[in-house]
Image (cartoon, rainbow, N blue to C red; front, side, top):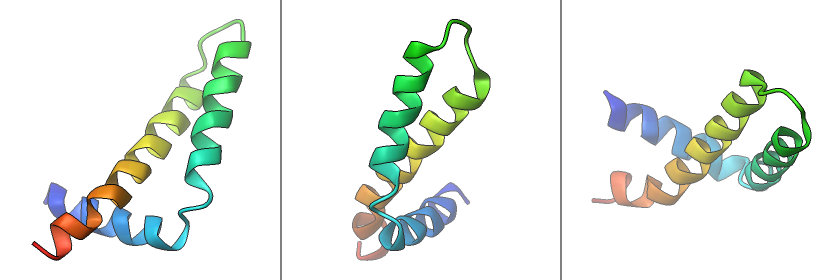
Length: 64
């Protein structure tokens, strides 16, 4: 089940690879700048990192 989710996220990453590094860096920068801990920024950073890792592991999952 989780491999299927990673496969879908990897396919989405394949088409939107240019957005996720910027999203990760901007969300981390906003998180460090803010005075209070924002769960929304933390979730955005985590989702961005998940998309990047799913995109990196996509060829191993599909072509293994």
